[in-house]
Image (tube, rainbow, N blue to C red; front, side, top):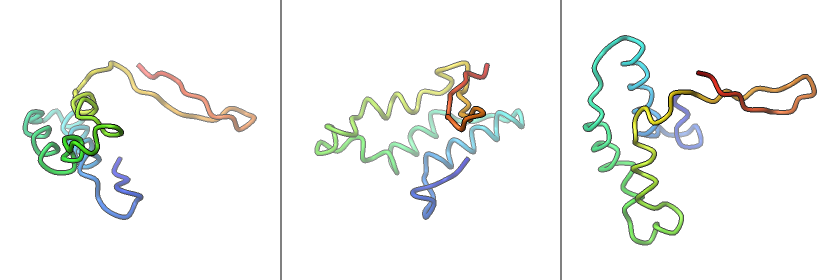
Length: 90
């Protein structure tokens, strides 16, 4: 799950996602509000800087941290000709 920033440094949002998935798989509790606060005070700070609103608006932070927004995942695969396609997995 964790690719980090250009696979060179850890990305907080990747780590948070991995911890959430781990908790779901293991049937453990996950403190969603605490996770959002941790991201908001760390890597997510960029979304709240006035100079970044044109390309990284604060609304994107809230959309990205809305847990369980969709009841499906998207899988990317290739067909026999090598063309990529996306399939909804429920």
